[in-house]
Length: 111
Image (tube, rainbow, N blue to C red; front, side, top):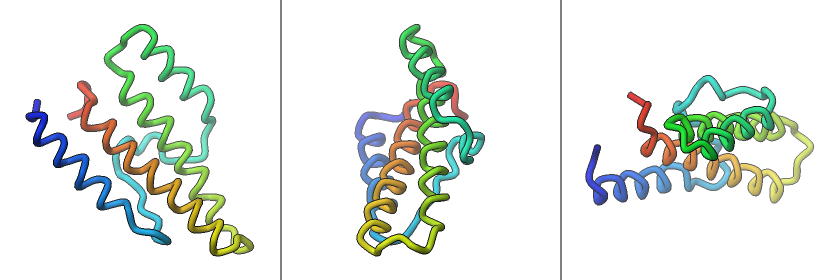
């Protein structure tokens, strides 16, 4: 595994990559969650794995977060949103993308 300093630098790079107001940026981490599928079963699997201290906890949370990001992306495609609300939703979307990649850094089962 990388050093703590390397991981801290990677976290900084990820946050800077996604901190661009008004521009949607999707992550490629955990593509199996990049849809508008059911959120709560994925969250339940992640929480259950965390409760059991399972090794798949990070990937399950990453998939859950990517599903939420997918729902937000679908909402952002609606043209009736005000610019202010669109910017807020975009910030949420990008923050989740950053969360997903940060979780991927800590995932012991990820290649």
